[in-house]
Amino acid sequence: MFTLGALAFVVAGCGSEDAPPNTEELAEQLADKRVGAMDNFTVGTQFKATQELTFDILYNNHSFYPIKKNWLFWSELTKRTNVKLNPEVVPLSDYENKRSLIIGAGDAPPIIPKTYPGQEDPFVSSGAILPVSDYLDLMPHFQDKIRKWNLHADIDTLRQADGRFYLLPGVHENIWIDYSLAVRTDILDELGLEIPKTWDELHTVLKAMKDKYPNIYPFSDRWGVPTPGGALLNILGQAYGTSGGWGYQHAYWDAKAQRFVYTGAMDEYRQMLEYLHTLVKEKLMDPESFTQQDETAIQKFTSGKSFVICTNAQTLVNELRPPLEKLNPDARVVKIPPPLGPAGNVKVGTRLENGIMISSKAAESEHFVAMMQFIDWLWYSDEGQEFAKWGVEGVTYEKTPDGKYKLADDVDFVGLNPGAKKHLQQDFGFSNGVFAYGGSTQLLQSTFSEEELEFQKVVNARETVPVPPPHPFNDAEREQATLWETPLKDYVTQQTLRFILGERDLSEWDDYVKELEGKNMNAYIDLVNSAYERYKKEHG
Image 1 (spheres, rainbow, N blue to C red):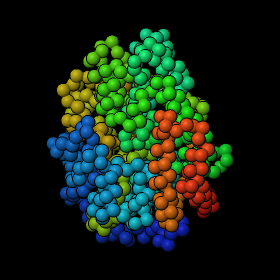
Image 2: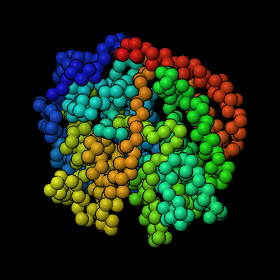
Image 3: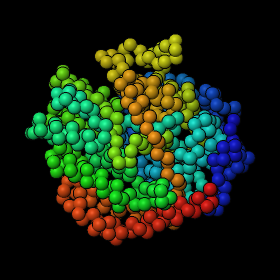
C-alpha cells in the first residue's frame, strides 16, 4: 500500500497551526473508527465491508434518467460491497443551491458528490468538510491513479493555503474534450461548404446560411440558463486565450508575464465579445441564445429554425438527432471539433472531474475507514469504475475476445444499440453521472462511437495548455476575496451580455474596466498574485 509520505501529498507546516497527521498519527486517530473496514485493502482488492453498512449520500437526480429504487446498480453494489446507499435526492436544477444550504445548516450527509473543483472553497474555513488529503492512506486506488498518471500538478491546483485539499476529484488519464458545436452538415452540403475549422470560418458559414435562409437565425444556442452563454463562452474563451461562461475564473494565468490577470478585463475577453456581438448584429445568432431555456433552443434546432447549437456527445445522440431526423429524414448533424481561434491549435482542459466532498461529521463515525475504502473502490478502482459505467457482465454488457466492451443486445446507451428496449442509464442506473466519471482513456472511450473517436483523435492532436499554478487563499484572504468575487462576477456577467447584444457599445470597454476597478478588481488580483507568490515560496 502506498503511503502519504511516499507520494508527498501532505504538506506539513503550510501556514496552519493544525498540521496534517502523519501515517502513525492517522492510524492512532482512526483506531476506533474501523468497524466494517477491511484489514488488508490494497490496489486491486475488491472492497467488501465485514458487516452490512448503510451510507447516506447526496444524490443529483438527472431528468434524463430519474432515480429508481429497483435499479440493478443498487442491488449489485450491495452484493459486491455489503454497502447500501441511502440517497437524499435533489433535482439537478437545484443541486448546487440545496448542497450549499444543507452544508451550511450542518445537515449534509457524509458523502457529497457531484462537486466541481473550486465549489468546495466556501465550505473550507467553517470546517464543514474534511481535508480529505489527510486520509489518503485509506485510499490506495486513488493514490495509485495519481502516481501512474502523474497528476500531482493537477491535484496541487486543489490545495488550500494550509497545503491540504478538501475535494476528492474524479481523475482522468488524459484531458477529455466533449463540448463543441453541432452543425447541420446537410445544409453545408447544400451550400457547397466544408465543416468550419476556425471561428472565422464559422462566421463565413453562418453568413452563407443566412443568405440562403434569410428568415432564420442560423445559430440559436442552449445552456444559457442560469449562466448566459454557459457552454458557448466556455468553448469560445479557450479559443481566444481566456475563460468564460461555465469555465469563467476571475484570475487567468498569463504564462508570459508569470502572473495572474483579471479575466473579465483581458483584451482577449473583449475580442471574444466583439466576435459574438458581430454574429448578433449581423443576425447570424439568435439574441435569445443567452437567456432561453434549453427546450426552446432544441425545438428551434430540431424543427429547422436554426442550424447550429452547442452540444456534447450524449445530447447530440439523445436530444438532437432523433427529433430532427423524425421531422426531416434527410437531415444530418455532427459534432464538429471545437473551432480554433487566436490562441492557436490548442486544447484547454483539466484531468480533474467533479468529485466528492466528505462531511466533517463523517470522521466521527465508527464506520469512517470502511466508508473511505468504499469510496476508493467505487470511484477510483478499475473494477469499481468499470462496474459503475458498464454494469454487470452477462446482463448489461459482454466483453469481446479482444477485451472490448459490447452492450447486451437489448440495451442501448448513447445510440450504440438504437432501437433496443432497455436503456443502460434509465433502466439499470449505470453510467450515472453521480458514480461514473473519470478513469482510463480506454474506459472513457469504450462507449464512444466511431464518429466520437474521430472527434477525439482530432482534438487530442492539439497542444495542451498547462494547468495554472496554485494560488490558495488563507482564511482571511478567502473571506475578503468572497466579498469581492460575487459583485465582480455579477457585473462581468451582466456587462458581457450587454456587450454581446449591443446594449452597450464596445467603444466603452475602457470605461467598463474602470468600473471593474471600482469594484476592487485590482485589489483582488493583487490578492491572487500575493497568494501565488507565497505558495511558490513555501512549496516551490
